[in-house]
Length: 84
Image: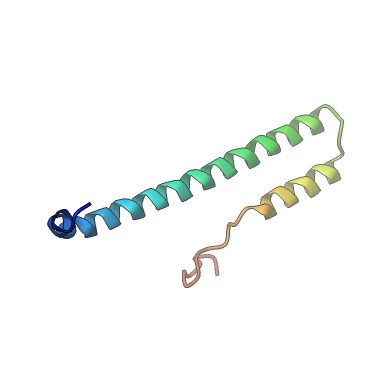
């Protein structure tokens, strides 16, 4: 790309930055949704195992705690929680 074309496209640089940022946010959100879907499937599988009697209530509770603990459910830093 030549110098003149770079100079001509310079006013569009902020737009390119916003597009790049939107792509990064979309990629992050898609990854988080995939993670949530995976945890949901695993929880459903655990419940099915419990219904078939293959695991105990205690094992189910322990596995649920482990799965839910793997999710990052903490509010962003600086955000005030409504609960307390």
